[in-house]
Length: 452
Image (cartoon, rainbow, N blue to C red; front, side):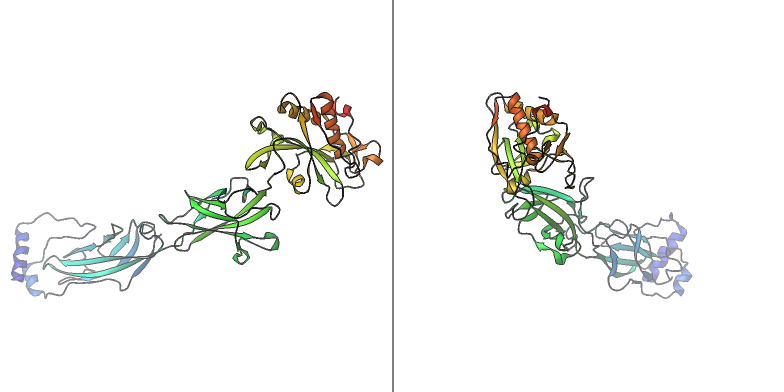
């Protein structure tokens, strides 16, 4: 019956030909054109298909169009290698959402495989493909299973570089920071979609050989931690930040994805001391001269009206009054050749305002400079104007009292305050300073050096 059916179908097509059908990516369908006498002389063979045994390994970043695997199949009359479109239809099933396609009857292509499985992007996964070959004459078919293993490719998270021209991330935080206060945030991205990054924070001691490239030199931080929030590593405090104990930290922040891929970045941290003995105002302050028993004086200005002064270059530095950042400046002077003890040069105003750190660490406040009428901004303008009028032209000596015609930094500050209170009687200060420990205080810069 089966031979009769085949003969009838083939004779029908011979007498009443139908248009030839086109081959498609999913298979081939062709009309039969085998003569009756050929059919009678052929012996039916079993349809078979052969696929590679065991999983075929590919990487998830395989370029589109790459050949994943090849297979062969034979049928009852013709070896398909001789005429692959003669009498067989070939199809594939189980493509995992169209990730693999039949390119021709002999191979399966990787065409549009995503970077990773959205359900488990950091692990290998298997795709099972069923290959079916069918004898269009006898409607005999055979199947084989091809297993493709898509291997995860290591893709480490990536930290963003700091804004130019900086080459390293650096943040500052006050020593009065509360637990959970934010130190700063660094953008970090994970090429693997839909994964959770974990963050770890370590400290290194660079002076003792600590290095970002040597994890054996890292210690877990007991002061800082990091959370992954909105694509950023947000660094926070959970321990005591103490300026006197440690005024700087070098951190290593490590981002780790679910499969263990990781990235690291180095972060510098500066600790800003809490200025507990300052409010806003104008102060006469002192600090010891390193290596001596003598003191250096200066005028510290922390304006009440921050909005007016915060954009003035002289007030670029910040200290904290409680938890509030406040802009400040320091009026002071030093020698033009401070490293040459034989010729210290001229008495000059500091080209850049000093930092309050040195005064806070070992010095303190000697006196408030106050105004009895008018407002504080007027007083600040007067002080800055008089100090700025000095021409940096007097000779410098460490001990002016024993060298007539010479002056030092204490001479400058005393001269500024004398000039200010001369032109503005409503401004006053009260401070008895021992010239033995504050050399130069008893030899103020003359008023005419300030244009008075």
